[in-house]
Length: 161
Image 1 (cartoon, rainbow, N blue to C red):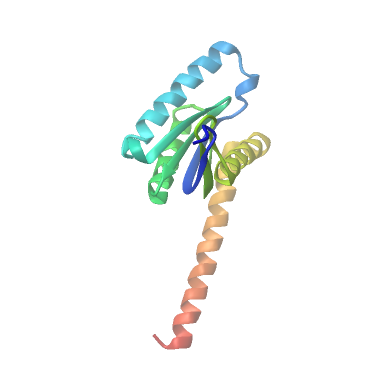
Image 2: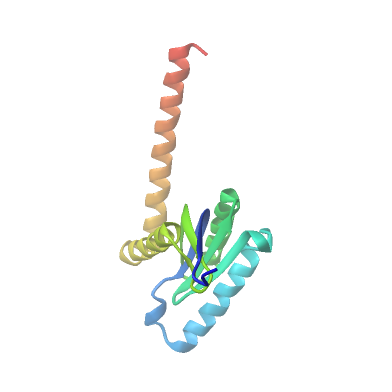
């Protein structure tokens, strides 16, 4: 059996990225890394150890959640509470294929997309500001929900349900 044998699985990947981590002084990086480790410990507590894999990244942490997309979403939502505590955190989440590599950890689209989403959020927040970004996202969600409600009402009317 080759030591590089891989297995493909579907998983949810939550990538927690500290914004502008590399630009910060080493002492601040160490403090933020400790805060991030604490966030991961708290947010993954409800997940069974066998259902999650925690991977280190240079500017954050990826948590691969197996067979529990709702648990991954709850983890991401709870991690965002760390922003209120002063940790400049961006969260990317994706559900997709990943490959376990016995010698290299994990690779795959699920991880890559989560990392890209977190980087995109971090870039947008640094450009427009956190409050403006959150307000824009909330407005988009409200518009989407209103459109969905209108669509469902029209379907109900068509079938006279």
